[in-house]
Amino acid sequence: MTNETPAPRAIGAGELVTKADLKPGRVIERWTDTTPTAIRVPMPCHERQHVTATRDTVSAVAVCRACSQTYEMVLEPDFDGGHFAILTVAHVPHLISRQARA
Image (cartoon, rainbow, N blue to C red; front, side, top):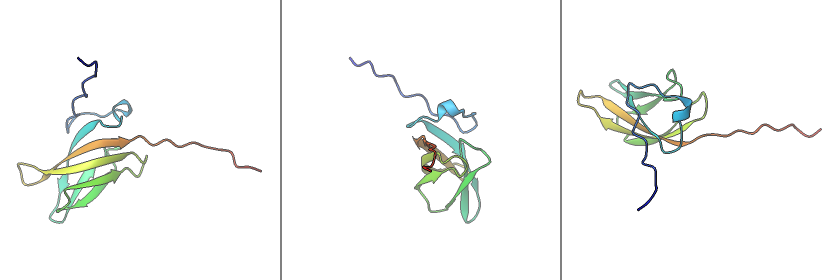
């Protein structure tokens, strides 16, 4: 018998995502905007930021321009002819500030 904690459930497409949810391995689902040539996927960390993929993209690495949060993204066909995005938090960026030497 193991004492492993079960993985948290995926955050649904319409659910709010908090900074505490952005832990490596966390799965977040998102609805997309699909046009004849592209698919726009909102970033879970900053909903006003989007990544744009081509219609033949199946998977990609997505990076938020506002905070550098990185996700592994998979696009699945939706029942209405569009797409559904499944994003897995890849890492949480850490930046360290240093004083320049004089």
